[in-house]
Length: 339
Image 1 (spheres, rainbow, N blue to C red):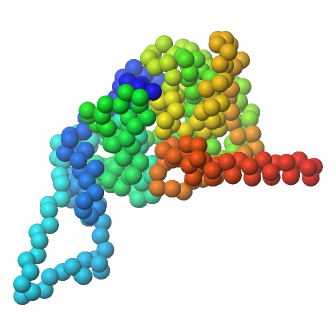
Image 2 (cartoon, rainbow, N blue to C red):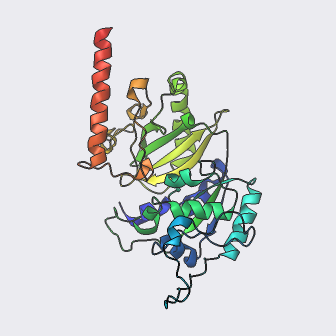
Image 3 (cartoon, rainbow, N blue to C red):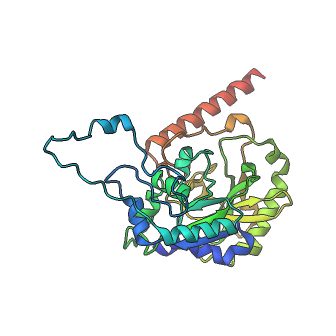
């Protein structure tokens, strides 16, 4: 994989080309001062000062009982160190406020490649739905997964020349409460040929997918040929789509082939060999969904999104998933024997 392939998957790069068939998004270049704020882990968890609503959220996540231990008594002879003033980004906050309002008052935020999925727990709703700049700052500051974008985006590149892109961007995506996870799919493209499609949410069995599998396959296949294949320049990549109730297909995201991108119901070795005979035959395309409840993958409660777990051969999560698959197969064989 080359840097240019990773760069094409940045939302500010692909979104302008696919705007008409994607989720409405507004993108802002982030000032370097805000990037450094996200990277700074030298002190306590401090939120920016809001110029619009001083009471939006507390500036500092703290424990008053602990702070008493560090108070200096009068006459102690020690000078209390003045705390640094909390950061403030007034221009960025005003731009974000305007964008949120134009997108209906609720947005889903992400950086160049990643969303702060691992910090959703800290929001009042337990989701990535944001209505203010301070809520976005809270999610970003609490997220470990964004370190991938900030420091490790090019780690898998054979021509790696830097640890980070020149600029970072904040993408604000319109929030849709009605989106259903059973209608999101990851598509795998190798050599500009669609070789695999996987159900995106692999922790749940959706019976409706069994009923609609063939029609969904045809929809996504046609969408790739008509709207994606000739417009995305990489030879190998993945892209996520969402199928609406009225059977329109929307691009959700693009990701590099391999590296930090999860193959979901495939393995990367399988994807490398599907249709490897060189034939441009649509019959080589494999569409995988969970066929029954026994095949459900476990929910992984970790500090990073499932997409950024190290599942490479030999890793702890690789062994965990192998053991899980073996247990599922054992239970399936047991059930079949009983019937």
